[in-house]
Length: 284
Image (cartoon, rainbow, N blue to C red; front, side):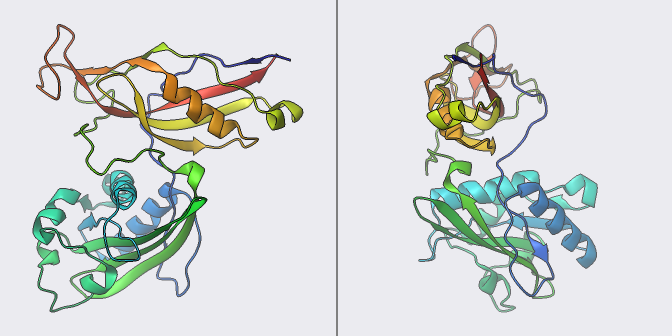
């Protein structure tokens, strides 16, 4: 039997990295993997506490430092908080970083009423986190703090498989900002060279047909980076999907009239965008 991959497509609804969920006001940690569950739970806590602003702090490693992965995961949490639906505002992480001026922030810091940094001047609530990584997974411990009242309103623990995490997070990404295609005159990237993935022996033995969904950042040069698995299928096919998408060549997304990153062309400016792609495995 031969393996074939149907042509990929960019769904028109922006999606984000699958991470974890917070169970609010619970005495024990709950292990989750769904970032949208996290967003809903945090939103419920903010509503219950009648807090109108929240900001996410960069997640820290066990030694108290901020890692590239910690920054990446914190940014994804900030991206998907359902602010309009829950009636609160998500403050850009950059505003908290400016106030902290290089300092890190954990729940124990935000709970201190005499903490030297005025966190409440940025937002009434802050989401903090700690991350431990190994070759197989990342373990996250997250806290949601009501800064004004000085109390913890939610906490959770999550274990994220390595295959669900970005494979190439850079501490100093040159592709800032990363835009969303379909918004603000930003086009969708188009794949120019999209070879098919390879089947694995496990997938072929199971006679599996299905689709791996990935989130990627397509750079202004037309390459896929920060590849994350949104929907896993197993059988080693998730890794095959990641491997083949790394080889794909895209026509980059364009943003008209905004001098970002590269020189203006007749079609606009090439920009980095975060979107998702689907890689379909089909046995013939």
